[in-house]
Length: 370
Ligand SMILES: *Cc1c(COP(=O)(O)O)cnc(C)c1O
Image (cartoon, rainbow, N blue to C red; front, side):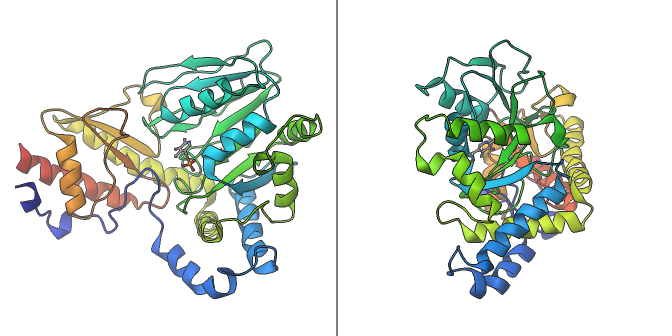
């Protein structure tokens, strides 16, 4: 029955990828990768062809985020999950205060909690759909929060909460789609397969002088640090446009393509605006329908990039299944949230016109299901 619902072509987005991560990789970036492929892919990452791509990505990010004096772009292998352990070994002195209001914030808090060389963290929690907030605390040397909690579609402001202590922001989905003032963070880190429209396998950290100094001090302290997770080694390699071990080269190239494209199209401000347009369309559409409503009720913390929409009286899983059969992919909610929901990511690579088409397509499906 459901596979009989064919959405008319004029209601379909030109590109049906709305996944929260991995997310839409633009066709232009794929062509660019194919174009330079033979001189880069399958060649030594210690030679200039690959190093030039790493350098292009590092410079592009410094531009996009208008990095203040002394901030550096550091990268390594292993994605955001690897970076959590990098931070546990190389950035945290003793005590963390961590905000946990969804899957990803809770994972970093857990990594800190079980680290035998660190003190017991303070974990501030909030129910999914709301935010937990950091605040100044005696004895804390790292404050950590997701910028955008990808599992729930909740985003917080990037702001310092204490005169000392490093601010760490997980920006895996927020990067390039949420506004940020880099002076308010010491380590803005992400993997490039969500907001940056690339593929997985790398972590990238925009680090302040204070964070670099901290990493160097801990590295010199004699603490046991596994070589793969050694932040000082990553900093030293990054300065030479290299990684400690073999990088995901296609991931570097695709990320560099996207960053260059965003810089050419008006930089961070324009990218954020494009995302607001897309998610704004989705939220106001949900507000206007009997059967839908935005999951995040506090508009101040509603994500600019990941729209979570609750459904009533119609099975969202069924909608997602029909959308998938019609080429609209990955609108399912975060699996552990267990809500009757669609989660729709509109990172900078997504065309706001496609977000609007998506609402037409969902209307068409709901009409036929109810
Ligand atoms: C997806 C995601 C991660 C995990 O990224 P990996 O590269 O798969 O390790 C971490 N944090 C946030 C906010 C995410 O959205």
